[in-house]
Image 1: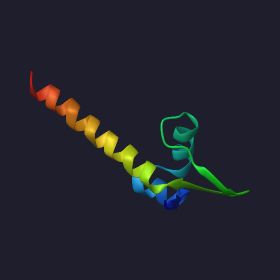
Image 2: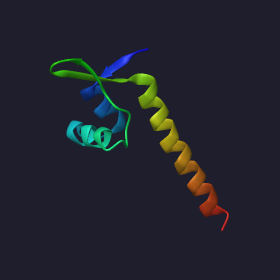
Image 3: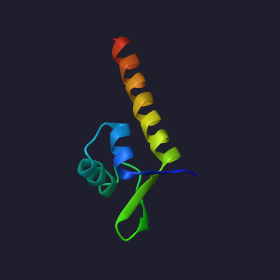
Length: 68
C-alpha cells in the first residue's frame, strides 16, 4: 500500500486541495487517512480506482450516446 499526500492527490485529479477535501467529506472521493495531527494522505490504489471508474463511466455514457 502506498500513500500519496493531499497536494499530490489534488494535482493528480486536477482539483484544488480544498475541493478535494470537500468531495472526500461528501463521500464523493476516497477518504483520506490521518497520518498525524496536521497531515493526511490518500491510498494511491483507491485514488487510481476512483479515476478509472470515472473514465469507465465516461466511456459507457459516450457509447450509449453514440447508439442513438
